[in-house]
Image (cartoon, rainbow, N blue to C red; front, side, top):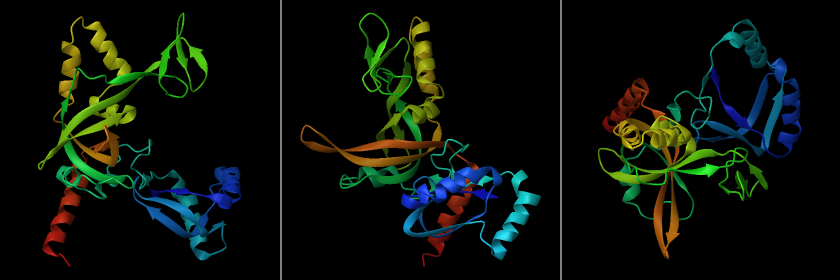
Length: 276
């Protein structure tokens, strides 16, 4: 009763991938040998050059699985273990427990992300969202790239090479997050910022413009602070005025699942008691 995402590469994607696509409605049994296990987006699997894939293999395990699926499996509720950034995940909580660190672990290591991005999980509060910042940009409704006002009316998208009468607003937000040991400024883009603020950029812009003053707008941002979240972040190095600076970007946001959090803390206590 668990699901996982498996990525097929190279010839397997072209051959076996096409066969699976053509027969997906028949729910074929798949056996795969030699897979790479990743944990950035929860548990995810990828094929390698030496991977072998068999569809509906004639082995006892496949027959047992088929019998279970036909009798009860296809009607069961499945839980994803690839829950990090998957849009189908309700909380994304499971993946937030890999590589958990405090904020000071990141901020006290200024060289983190120098050669390649580093990824961590954090439990923290959003402690400040500056209301005066430019929190969104006008985006193309087709490709989400930034648009400019067109001559006459509408908006011009360089990526799509076309005019459109309408556009969307998409978040590009900076906020301060805090935990028990420290604080840091992080960048969050549209989907992640929506989860933090609790509404879309279009809705927040409408609230700001309809008020006549900005009390309602500021209140909305205030309500989003001091709420605990689980964050998946990337750490990279950006160069500014010939000086490298650490950049922390939110890759996923999930609410605190207190049952999962309790299990995680119990495991951490167990490790402290039995360091071996």
